[in-house]
Image (cartoon, rainbow, N blue to C red; front, side, top):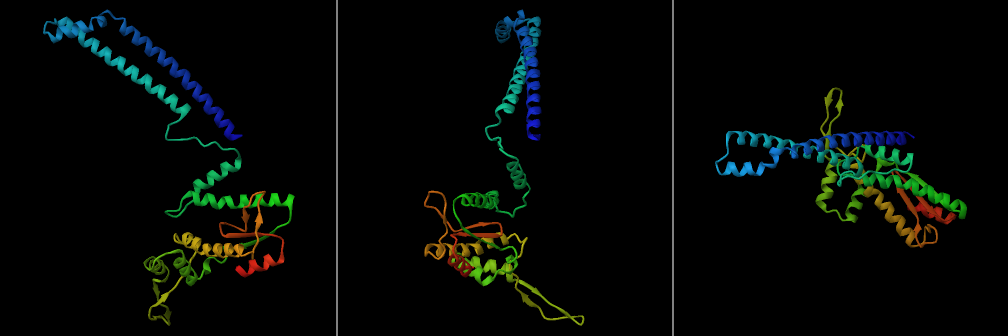
Length: 285
């Protein structure tokens, strides 16, 4: 409702601006016609030729200067007229480098506002957040469809609590499997293992020792490394689905089989209603 009222007010302002521009434009054209009807203006070319031939009188020179001022006024009026028309065209059609986003529901507006308020790490695109938010929508539509068709098993795992206890050895193994070289892996390892500290014992510091920290929420590096960590689970679930250990579910009449969905810190395993599939899913985890 608020968007409708704002759009209606903007339309009214645009109409008033158009009427005002039309009145100003008619006044400018009247002044231009008045200048063109001036008898001295008709002799402008003759005055130009006289001045070029050095036979112009003092009166001719004064008339020529006056006509030059009138010419400048006409040019300025035409420039203002074109500028005003271009502003109205911009308000109606918009600039070629910009597009107006048409939203269809309040949820779309809330999603856009959320995207604008996200504080993402450098290098993290908004498309990444958009894909994360698409997960619950896909799952909700899938559940609604299966309620009318047949049974299915949904197994949800929350990784948020396990985020701070990710094994570095497993993460280093995944970096190696994906194809990261030794240099890159050593750089990432140094970010986690380069800290040194000491402890005060009876007021005296002990010798320094290395502190190895894992991933923690809020670290700019954590989202990227956590994606790599999740990639290992994704590969394991895909392999289990390939060998028939987790059968997954078929969506609609297509041959697409969906076995799991990732979004935010959760993974949802979807498969047929079978205790064997549930046991195999637990074994993969």
